[in-house]
Length: 291
Picture 1 (cartoon, rainbow, N blue to C red):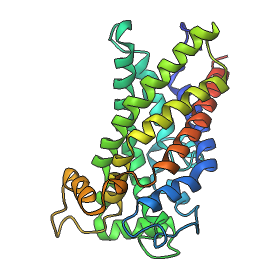
Picture 2 (tube, rainbow, N blue to C red):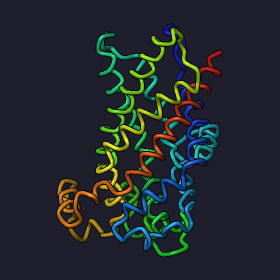
Picture 3 (cartoon, rainbow, N blue to C red):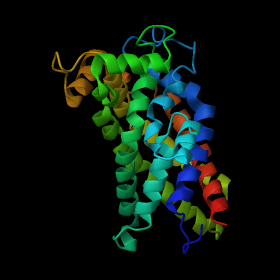
């Protein structure tokens, strides 16, 4: 993209959907392994290396909010991270319409990414709840995503689909506040170095890989917290559940610092490699759509 052009909301939506599809199909098994490593029952009891695509159908639970036949089809196509079309559509819109001056560009990127994450989590969290529980066999071996969704609705009501919303926001805002300003900074510096704008897709992919890997490693404790909250099957209407800070402290006290970084290697590899594919495909797709 040139400095004078910018993607429309629909172009960002389509590009995000294409990029999300590529990432989800390639890297879902790594996400499953990461989630099982973070599970309180332990990696082996959570499923080990068996059924590493369990829970991939959970996108069907959250695809309805699309509102149109096109968006409905797009959300189903983009599999697990259906937040991606919404995220980039919101992110690009806010980034290019920010009232902040140019010298506060990094703050613009940070705020745009944070607001986009909150909006995206409204769609994403219900599928994350089902996906996480299906991946770790929390409802018992062999349970499908649909069975998990029905059980959640029967036991916790509609609110059960938003178990972990706060902890997801608590993870995603720091993550995107690191990832996207760093991504934009790396792209800017690389553009100056090469004397070329826009960057080629593979160059944007490298920037995305580095930014995603750094953000993933630094926010792993918050990802562990999110996983534990979503896997907590206790009924919040019958007993008081611990606060997020109490949960985080409890993990540290009872399991040690290593538990807070459980799954850091697959998480970093997954997001670093996924960031390269996702952001590379996104830049390629949005540049192609704008021609």
